[in-house]
Length: 111
Image (cartoon, rainbow, N blue to C red; front, side, top):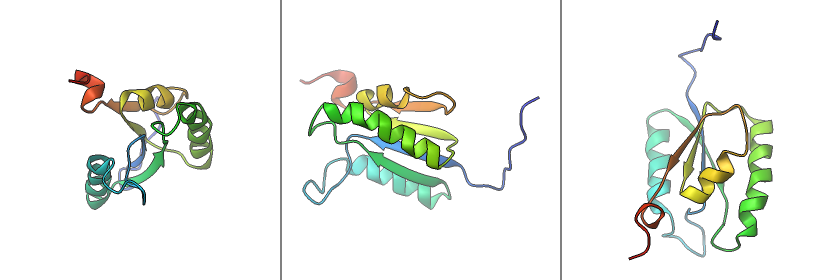
């Protein structure tokens, strides 16, 4: 029998992305930031794990350990991975469902 869920508790989402605004790149990933803000405005609890893969491909490997650390600190209802490489990182765990959104060249390639 499945565990009962408290429907009064807000949904907890971990958004994992390799594109998110920073001081040095304030416009990078503003679509992801907008999505996070829209979910928060709807009453959903959202944390963001930014993995700077474009800076170094090794960051994806380190991102797996950072993801595990996040999951040890807090339980999430779902992980929303933005971009395909991040989807691979998000799948390096068991127990939390993953939704992957591919954006732009992830889907269509570079034109």
